[in-house]
Amino acid sequence: MMSCVATITGPGDGIARVESMLDEMAREHRLDADPVADMHVALDEVLSNIFRYGFADGLPHRVEVRLSVGPAMLKAEVEDDCAPFDPLALPPPDLSGTLEERPIGGLGVFFVRKLMSAVRYVREGARNRLVLEKWLSESDGRANGTA
Amino acid sequence: MELREEDLNGVTALSVKGRIDSGTAPELGQKLEGVVSAPRRGLVIDLAELEYISSAGFRALFIAAKRANETGSRLVLCSLPGKVRQLFEIGGFLDIFAIAGSRDEAIARVR
Image (cartoon, rainbow over all chains, first blue to last red; front, side, top):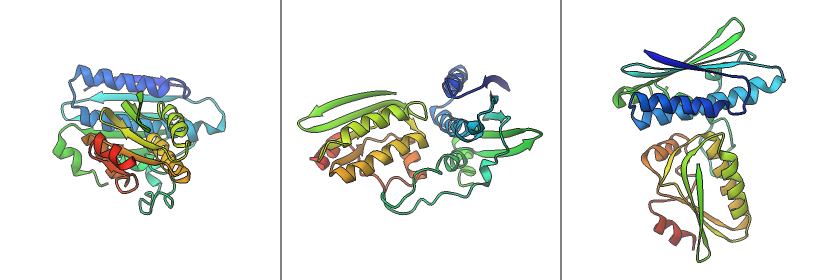
């Protein structure tokens, strides 16, 4: 499995660098556009959440994103040293109601869960570690899509 | 993300090309705010060349749709590619926004 890593210390160009890294990997391995798009969306949600909430304490933090691709799977491991936060513990958003009634927000983590084949969270010492896996075959990809 | 704005006899057509994510959504939001703030305006957002949209982008569209309701403007999205349509479906947005199959249909609906 081949992989590459980006270390980010603030919002700045952090998400854009991860975006480019994924694009490069997708080109190199000729990955289908669909699973790559899903991974782009998931990483945007995960990283923007870390910057919005994890960095809110004003302290310096480091986020490490490792992308890897194997024959059947695209994988992202996101580690940060922010306060403990398990995104998988959040309740699903309420998607019912009209434009006027629906609250904005709460969708990001929901997208991550729906778009990825598997998501795991673990607190390791002083670090949050989130693992996103996307199966590259379409049939496998939807198998766990309702998680 | 690239935005292209056209005026079609009083209807504004905004084409969005590329990706709407947390990095590009603010620019889209600003552009939409400017258009929908004009009273009783027709706005078509053509998504034919959109690769994907994340929750930050949905937030921008959502705010614009609410604003359009307030100002009496009409906003219709059109030409959603398969992946984009899937994201709208997952987010429960297919019934929230006015969505047309083609640009012509969208223009007819906002006139």
